Image 1 (cartoon, rainbow, N blue to C red):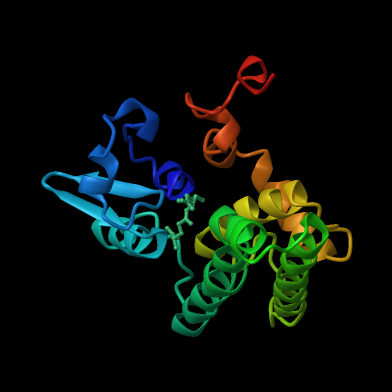
Image 2: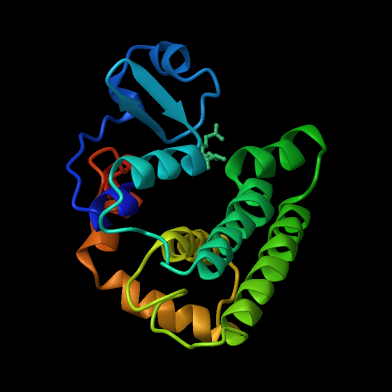
Length: 200
Ligand SMILES: N[C@@H](CCC(=O)N[C@@H](CS)C(=O)NCC(=O)O)C(=O)O
């Protein structure tokens, strides 16, 4: 969501959940997950819904290719990341496997690497099969697919997944991470990201 807002040049206020009173975030967003977008009297949960809102409300510059087929492909690429990779490897799933099902750390890692491996392999093949090769996933500038891909690659690295088998994904990442829209959206760049002293 932050990358999308940055790419479109829309200013926003980042409110850390930790700055709210206990229970306040759940009252605003009963799903309880991050992020949520607060617009006037409305709170919108789920990144996919938030991104659709941002794209519809602020169509220029578009995050999607002009061509309807490419547009659908970009959405499909992003949906694969959100549904088939992120949701299966997110912290609450890993903790459930470990704390409720009694899986060892090694088994949890096996689960994570399995789903990430399947996902990234499919994404790499998708980029290889593009009829027109482009510097970003589906065009000459970063958009819908890229803003899903880059955070998922960071997560995967943190979870111990080797990304070297995916040269096309890595080349897109190299082009994105130097851009301010991506740099300033990183969790590490947010005011509530734990400082080294907090982790000690
Ligand atoms: N499908 C949701 C996933 C949201 C999600 O899992 N967010 C994580 C942070 S990246 C979260 O809220 N984790 C807290 C938790 O699992 O309780 C979306 O795309 O917005």
